Image (cartoon, rainbow, N blue to C red; front, side, top):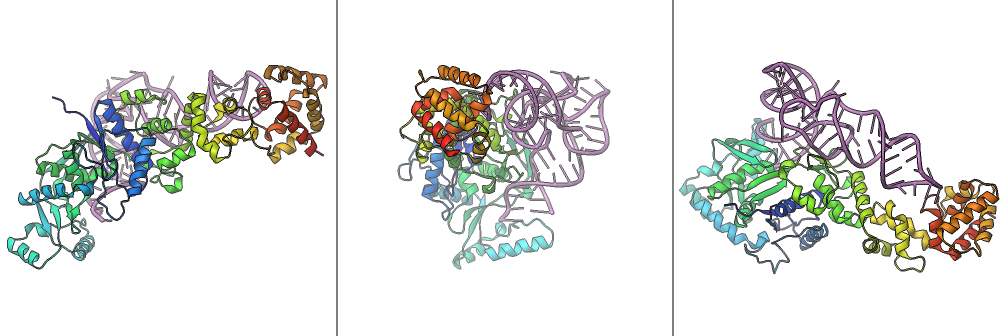
Length: 485
RNA sequence: GGCGCGUUCGUCUAGCGGCCUAGGACGCUGCCCUCUCAAGGCAGAGAUCACGGGUUCAAAUCCCGUACGCGCCA
């Protein structure tokens, strides 16, 4: 019998969803979809001081924007009941406590009365003697009488999990293979805090088991805690899930990806004009590849081809240049109607949504293949709707060139009554103008472009003139000439 | 400090003992197309496979060390 695949993403709501978390979410989602399994979202809010509802919202918004969905998990704090109970850890404390009591009753965990000062001292001594700074397990051996005395004195305690003292724990990682840890080198982890609540490592084990998670795919930083977690599963009489530890995502300087490298939040990428599909595709490839090094994937391909075994063990550097290329690829594949919908917020922000002027659909198709980011769009089309702003260099080089003014005025005259004011006809007419005056193409084409757009680069010339229409073109030709004095 | 993980073109990677004079992609350079910028097409530069030892007829691929980077223990 094969059990149904269940994966999860379990963020701490202490900030936004960053790139690394987004990739972890994606991989869990892809793996679940690939195996017709289920993907669960759980909120690990045991850090009461740093957890905020705003973070939950930001994280869920990010996942939704990425186009990923989940089968179970939080909607909001008050309506989050599912087949496995609430999906916020702070609402599950009673469950954790029940399992804690069981471990203590079975002698697999014990109360530790050491104070912070004692632990600090222990660590200091260990360092002095060049021993690893580990908890020495002194409360493990407390007699019943000593414990009773401590209780009577009202001493605060944490609870520690008893690690086996011999043998080794093997983590059979889906990405890294078998990784072995000597048990006697692991310390007795605190599973219950003095402030009366579960620690991350404990709550995580209980939840993953009770929620039926079969595959835990998470960041590299959790690999070292995995042997302890495996021993907790065993102590509770449970079968551990399959673990897979993903390598980290680095910044361009080889350090951990951080703010100083640019955007780290998924939502910032949305705001910069990246498409969700770009993010899915790029993130999938950051640490995973197919044997043929395929670059562009449809979602269906991503789902059928994704495989934990194909994941990279070494860290990957986040490359914005490649991200932009990929976004350009997908923007070019986007139909014009959809492109307009996507560009709307960016155009609105630039004051380019709805002003009178050429048909937006036509204008966008003129420059379609140049868009890398949705946020590029306003800048590339603004001169269709706003007064020309001359690039000083273009103005000096092209319009101040000898004869340019005469060309502009001559053309304005030639096009005054010219019909039809259309691409091909305009091209013919203007080429004839060039020939009649014994000029070179560039001596005419370039000044026109700068006169009507203010810059040296832009859409294909004659079609652009058609789209602008006679009035705008004539006005701009004359205006540019006038500026030349 | 201990334990663990990692190391193939600038970057993402293919590679699981012979097909590798190391393949693809981004980026870069040049050419073509051309009214500009793109897009597209073609060509090219770019990796002594971190280093040193083994094993083997044969190693980027297996083993052992070293270095460097990273993570966890705080």
